[in-house]
Image (cartoon, rainbow, N blue to C red; front, top):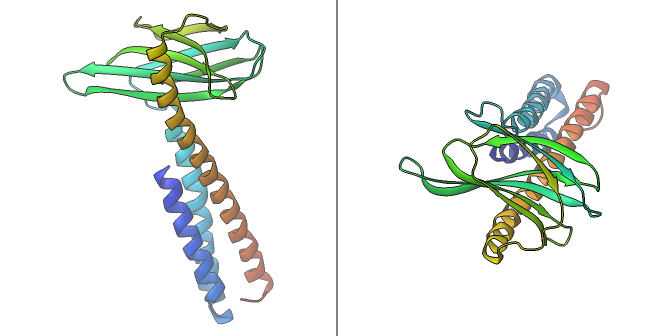
Length: 198
């Protein structure tokens, strides 16, 4: 996320420099705009790379199938409690599954004591919560509506996944902002080549 915000700031700066620059500076502008395009594309690529579990030391692969009649958002919440890391948690958002759809994702499980698979409906209500303490590298879950979910766990899951939803929305805005700014830079490069104004 940080790299996306840095890229947005840099691309806006380059667009402002280009807008206020004089026509005689075309060659320098081409280099600057080209640099901005490379930085923007690199930021998108690096964000995608780090957003995945690339390089995870203890990856856990999770396959889910939505057996309900609702669209559900799928999450994994890993909890840890150890001497070197203290206590904490990490939420991984997978995707929104339509009825009878499958998903396949993975997350880092190094040093965790347990993890939860959580499914939320469109209104943010918890439809499914499964607690896992087994130390395996692969799991398959059939997501069904759960009737007797611990109310404390529901509250914890709602709070943690709400924060993740907010971060996901901000990341999407940052990604689309980068794409839009890269597009503007490409258009401005075309204007420079054709001798347009500015």
